[in-house]
Amino acid sequence: MKNGFAVTTAVNRFLASRFYPIIVGVICFLCHSFGLELIFFTLVAITAVYICFCNGNSLRMIPLVLMSLIAMSHVNNEYMHGRGLTDFIADSRAGLIYLVFLMSVFGVAIIYFLGRRLANKPSRLWEGSAEYADKPSEHKGLLLLKNSKLLPGLLIFGAMYLLAGAFFSEYEASSFGYSIGLFAVLVPVFALVLLTIEWDKKSFDYVCDCATVMLAVIALQIGLLYITDPYLADLVYTEPRRAKSLVFLGWAASNLIANMIAVTLPFVLYRMVTAKQPLIYFAVAGAAVIAMIYTFSRTAALFALPMYGLVSMFALFKAKGRKFLWIAYGILAAIALIMLPVFWTEIIQSLNFFSVTGWGDSDRYLRWDLGLEHFTDWPVFGVGFSHLTYVLGQQEGRLRFALYHNYIIQLIASMGMFGLLAYLFHRYQTVKLLIKKFDFVNVFIFISIGMFITTSLVNNTLFSPLTMVVYSLVMVMLECHNRTKKAKGEIS
Image 1: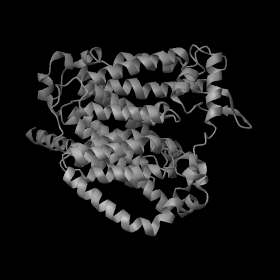
Image 2: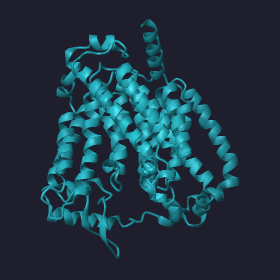
Image 3: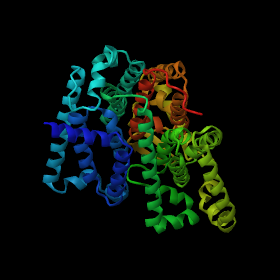
Image 4: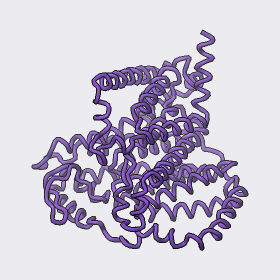
């Protein structure tokens, strides 16, 4: 028995280390590169089951969740090849049965995990079981949800997801399916993590490190895409619009990739400012920004680049490791002075997309007009997320999921006035919690939320299930950080 405790203690110590997210990221990158998502998801499920039974802290699942969001490769995605991951798995009945079995085991593990949490009976194997036992009663079980500052707004907003399109005369079942997806990644994810997380003053740094690994993997994926696809690299110079359409990683296309970088980047920059050794965060942030630029997403670049520049200037004067940053930026400036005159023409030509496209609306005005028309006709609960009346240019037909590329218009067109009011109530709760203890951590949470909102002005960041998973985790971070004692200042 002692040997068993020794093993789980060693494994749990590893899961709490900075090496664990890095290893998950490396495996994710390799599996993504070779189209081996099924292997990666299997390893994720096994690790998650272990965490449920032998670790007891959903904080250790965050690397698994973040890497799973970006694991899908273009090799197995129907967008490019007419074959989805489900087809890949279903090639053999045994593979499909195995996947269902794996999901069932994970479901049982989650039920066990939640049951112990709700009963306030932590396993002796769990990480921090003694600390959990010593916690005040208000930090246990369902009282965690009852005392949550954000859950009421999330529940109301989630309910409006489910009611989106109610009473619309051409309502479709696919709209309800999309609504369930958005609801699932918003409310249950938030509640599940909040109920099962062990949060302390080091936890925010841990999540930021996970975000750093995630952005490093995305930057590597973008780099590998350009290296392995010379046709795409040529199109960047000759047909930039066509090149943008081919920036596809399997889990997302260009705009969504850039938005994912934009909303996650603040947490990497937080570590660049607060870490004593900031160079790895400096490098990852820079690589992520370059990757974002070469997705050719104008919106993400418009909002994320100024944010990156401002935080970088702040870091030069206030970061704990600012002397290292001065050296790094000095070396970078010297390299730029040497290399830019040599490669200036190639660099400018590689960014032709921005000059060719400019700030054209890419049919967004038409989408917005249509959304306003739908709101006028169905102002109470909107028209939902799928309908048959979508018209774009000269083409008329069904748009599987009606996304208007503006979150305000999306709210009123898809969810009506009640959807807008529910969102405003949720936003009021987040702002109230942010300003209650507006310390350095909350500043960067605020910046991330700002990236969600600004990129959603002309994109679908707040209505994409992938980015909404990250949003739910940001809400958990905000809730957990603001229920702990006021943190000491971290900037020297």
